[in-house]
Image 1 (cartoon, rainbow, N blue to C red):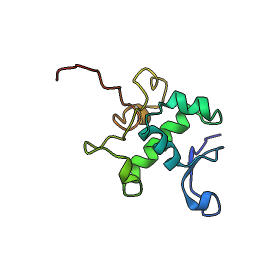
Image 2: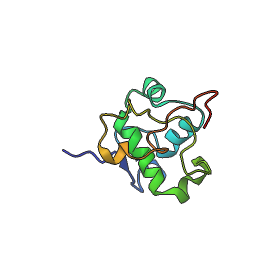
Image 3: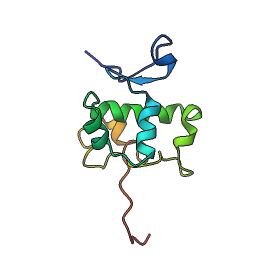
Length: 113
């Protein structure tokens, strides 16, 4: 069975896109991320979440930027921490390749670019 991780149903959650098998909307996850929560912290607080479900919510937001524009940085990445490369290593390629959206390494203090 293929799971559709983000669902949109006008009769559920007032039509706001939500994560499969949860009462959490894509916007809820983006708010948590923008406030500094890492995906592991989200799962700790909401054990019904799945890692791939969070990643798919981030991908959904990237495809619907007009709806979620407040959660994007000027460089096009999502605000807040994402998955590290290591955390995303077992994701399907379409999720691993979304740098700044799904995969976003923490900034290194004192790094010279």
